[in-house]
Length: 291
Ligand code: SF4
Image 1 (cartoon, helix red, strand yellow):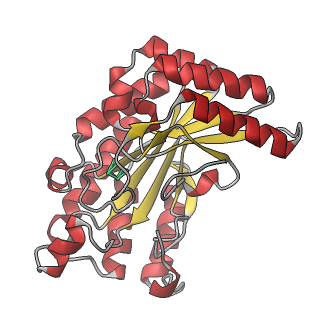
Image 2 (spheres, rainbow, N blue to C red; image 1 turned 135 degrees about the vertical axis):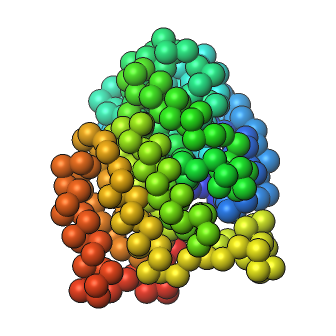
């Protein structure tokens, strides 16, 4: 297997085979993101992808690969034709494959027709991760997310209608202290409209060299204190109205790891958050936080 540069995956893809089908992120402008600074976006030749698959087949010697995560940043940008060609090889190689997952941007999804999305889901591309970050357009514009909240809501709804489950990610602290209320309220509003299968939260950590870290160094942006991050999470969860959405904060950046299903477990989740705020459980120490 040949990997180029830093390769990231969501925590829930820890047991998946990671297969790079693109390099970097086609957007690559979010001010908080330090993932692909030196990796310009490009697609990977099919022959190279195929060679990687053949190598894994030799290595696993007939053992089944059940889950595959297609990297890098927004691999769903590939045309449906190219994606179907890759999925065909994956399905032929491992007939018991359970699911293929991918990172996606709103425009990747919006550009595809509902029948294209259904075709991809039919070939086991059944889970896509989308970084909503915030439901507040002022924050999204400020961090150069490249999509509005409304576009992301439309994208998530469209993918789910097409049979692709969506895992949506929010970023606590992205609005700083002055927009914390708006960030909580409007992210909750967007998630309520999306009703994604999964919603997870990360907590902002400044990555050296990113524009957001530079703004913070100049005093133009303030990172919330740990307690304010957890209060923001409480406010967000309290305002979400969804159905059967698996909620988790198991990412290493979070101060308070919590999980459950919204709305079903909302009261229990809020009680657990209150436990952190009232000092019954300690926040994750800074030394144990990470991206
Ligand atoms: S879309 Fe995702 S990977 Fe690309 S720059 Fe933004 S946060 Fe980073």
